[in-house]
Length: 359
Image (tube, rainbow, N blue to C red; front, side, top):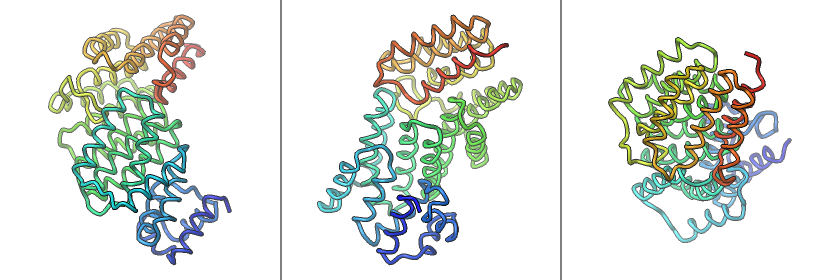
């Protein structure tokens, strides 16, 4: 039995809970959870959420210890302190206050480093999970969990958090949130060229949930375009891009809005710039890059580096592999280390692979 599975089992037994009672809170069977506790299956974040909710009704200490273990490479002492401070002082933000905090995380995501944001957000998630007592709170948690997934270092880790966010969104019974969480997760993975089957699944779920124009739908359709590009299907990629643009015309965020929850014109241009770079379509790619640079707020230096990497990818695919690679590495080096992200690292890797490939 691995250490984490052992912790789950011990905490459950000490709280007097059965596997069946935990299973009732998830889509997993009691036998599957037994395998998780035995270390034969992975303790995914949605399973962790079920355990922490169940333990929250039985024992604050065990719940917070398990939550701290699950959140990731964060200082456990700080997380436990946050949880206990909230429990002992009776600190309880209303839904509106939590909504405002999550909105601020969306704005901060655009401008600060992932590590700093992750630490702060993890602490709030520890406290927030004590108050998931209404659909509105589940909606707030779903958005926070999606942002948290974006701060992780590996696609597999991000997917775990996106899956948890999907569960939380479904608990909210808020259709717009359910679509947005899936669409945001889909474009995050597809833009990175990571886990394309999962990105496709998230996108298809979002599109199937509602055909109403929304930012979630825009991102899901753009994800479909990137998945098609990654599979070498140019016609499908262009068709999905056109679908996304038609929806975007109805729901575009204002140009001055800076938030991970927003899709203003400069961000749509950034999505399309990467798409055209992948497809090797120079003219529309250059236009998208020009549009992104012209409209993007000056403070968003990380996103300027995105565009530079797109240019490098197009250069490499156009035949100048050494030139494209050198351009990408200069752009990466020019961005301070604390402003880099998993996404940028994956785009850089794609340029490096293109520079090595024989076309």
